[in-house]
Structure formats: structure tokens, C-alpha cells
Image (cartoon, rainbow, N blue to C red):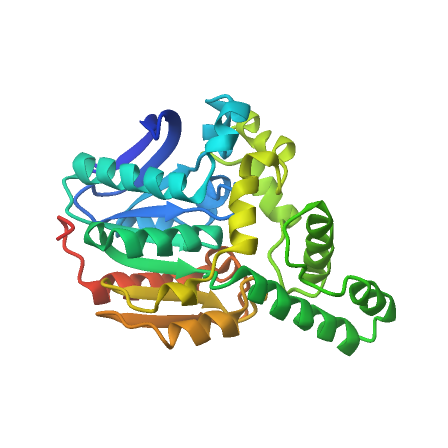
Length: 328
């Protein structure tokens, strides 16, 4: 790794200190910015479980977004909270991409967005196509309300098919679902739906093995891991993003035309960002190059659930885009 990199740093982005972690075997390789999901759920504590084979092909940059993970602890979360808006985080992404371009002497950067990160990645790629070598959506969100409606009907069907009358009745009590407004009652119902989706293997959830691996992560200390216990999935620090996702975001209304190569990698068992909805929207996309990769027996986090198949898809994307060492 004479030309490799393992760099952990805080950079001033959007007026606050934000955390970046760079890893790769050769800095001449293309650079890929990984936009984590949530909102507010960094994937870096789990990265050692899936990204090591990637490091031969790309330099991966993880970013703990505004009020998330290590960035959360390096600022005053209460002061940052009012700034956690979609527009601000898109601009944070813009600043980071330009920082990476300068650091690695690249003209363009690959964007990989997972779950909420796929919303951010799609918005950024549409707004700044001249900076993006290719966009890769994993667990792509198209419309949050449609996601929840389809996912709810699927878990209701699963409970009925399993003959579990108690689960079926409990789910029926949540109707009408999803409600139109993001409020505390909606959060309670969403958490109940997620619990049942995990039970019937329709949604991502932390396994004991994953939790233990995260606690032993070489990229996150036990002190860093406190974030996941004190922030809360729907904490005030991310609330404006949730309101936007629930009440406003609709990728299809923004148009299906992209000026860059677009790739989706999606688990066939993903009913958190339902596979059929992502597939349906993808069929309408117009782009210079596009491909949809289905990962059998994978759910919402295919890079962890079916690592080999996911890597095959990712490496095929890199080969097809013919990304040169200098990112041109």
C-alpha cells in the first residue's frame, strides 16, 4: 500500500467540523463517496464487514453527516440541529466532493447512496452532474409514503400467511397507514411496523453478530458508539429531514432524466424501500448508461447480507463505467 491511504480527519464543511474516513490501496484509483442512510445512521462501524475487497478498486470515503456519528460529538448538537435541512446537506455534499476532487486530483467522484443516502445522492447528482462520475443507488428511495404503504401491505400479508392472528390484528390496528403527517404518533406506528417487518425478514435490523462486530470496529471506538444509544432514530437532530422525506420527497416528480450513468443495486427481499417500486422507477430513467442489479435473498442492506453478489455488481459497475485512474 505504498500509494494507499487510511486517513481519519475532521474537515470544516458548511461551517461545522465534519468527519471523513478515507481508505484505499491506491490513491490513483477512482474515489467513491459513500452517503450513509438513516437519516443519522452512519454505516462506518460496520464498514469492515464489507468494504475491504472494494479498497483494491476504489478509494472509499465515508462521511458522518451533519449531527451524525463522530460529527455529532465534535460539535454542539443543539446548535447544529436547526441547520439539518435537505438543502444544507446537499450543499455539504457539494463542499465535500470539491474537497475530494482537490485532494485526489480528480475531475469527478463516484457517489454511492444507501437508503436516505440514496435520496441525498439522487438530489446531488441531478443538481451537480458535472461533478459525478456515476451514481449508485442502494436501497433506493423513490417516495417515502409509497414505500410505507407497500411495505405495510406486505407485512400484513406475511402475518396473515403465517397464520399469526395476534400480529395480524396488531397491524390492522395501525390503519390507516401511513398517516400523512410526520408527528409523534406516526413515529410510534412506524416503529411498530418496522418491528413486524424485521420479524418477517422484510426490513433491516441489527443482529447480535452485527452489534458485536460494530462494538469491535477498527473504525469506531466504544466512545463513538455512544451515539447510537443517545441520538435516537428519530431524534430532534434529524427531524427536518424526516419531515421532508415523509411530506415532500418524490423522486418521480423530479423527472427521470439523468446526465450521468445511473446504477441501482437492490435486494429482492427489501420491503423497507420496496424492490418493486425501485424497479418500476428505474425502468423510466433516461441516462447515458443505466443498469439495475437484483441481489437474491438480500434485503435493505445487501452489502452486508449478500457480500459476494453485491461485490460482483459493484465491480461490474466500475468496469462498465470504464473509470480511469485519474477519474476522467
